[in-house]
Structures are given as C-alpha cells and as structure tokens.
Length: 72
Image (cartoon, rainbow, N blue to C red; front, side):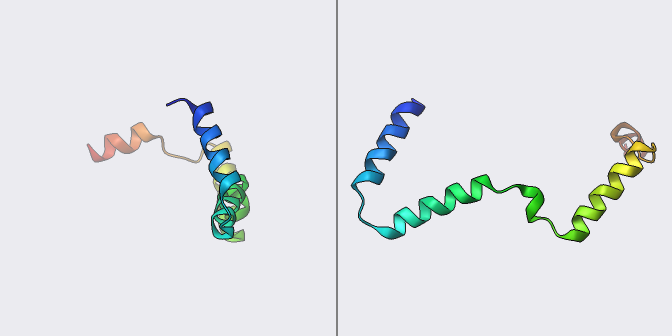
C-alpha cells in the first residue's frame, strides 16, 4: 500500500463530495485522534495513577516475574 497514493485518493474523494455528513464524520475522526487520553480520565482515575506512581517510586510493587512464580 502506497500511503501517499491513498492520501491523494482520499483528498480527491473529499474534494468531490457534497455530503455534509461525510465531512462531519471525517472531522470527528480527526478531532478524536488529537484528544489526549489523559483528559478522558476521571479525577479518581488520575488520582489512582498518581498514587500508583508514588508506590512504584517507593518500591512498593510486585514484579511480573514474582507474580508468575506465584501462579505457575
């Protein structure tokens, strides 16, 4: 697949369309792509992540290998 050729074909299709729904759908795709996943999190989720980072920095975690030993 030649990405440049694909882009050119999409540009032509977009330029030729008169359907506002298609244009709006494409706009939504690009807006969604630009969103920062962090902004999608709730305040509780952000706090949980911050707490996990602190615990990790203090060495309060179990490695993957340790967990696998326990359940193997």
